[in-house]
Image (cartoon, rainbow, N blue to C red; front, side, top):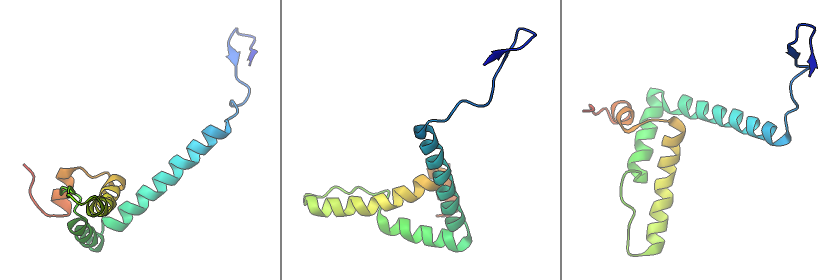
Length: 106
C-alpha cells in the first residue's frame, strides 16, 4: 500500500491468496458444477421419473430403526443415497411433492 498524493491509500495488486483459500475456491467451484450436474440429470421428465424411482426405493423418508443393527445399518446406508441426491438438488419437501410426486402442497 502506498499513500497517493490526495491522502488516500492505493492498493497495489490483490492480496496473495493462501493455498487454503485457493483450495476452498476450487472446492466451491467443483461443488457448484456437481450441483448443476444433479439438476441437469434429475429435472428432465426422464430424470424426474428416475428420481421418483430412486426415492421410492431408498426409503429416504422412512424410519430405518430395526432391532438388528446390521439390517438397520444397511437401511440407513440406502436411505443416505436419497438424502444425498436431495441435498444436491436443494429441493424442499413442498417442491419435491409438486415436481416429483405430483402431489399438491397445503
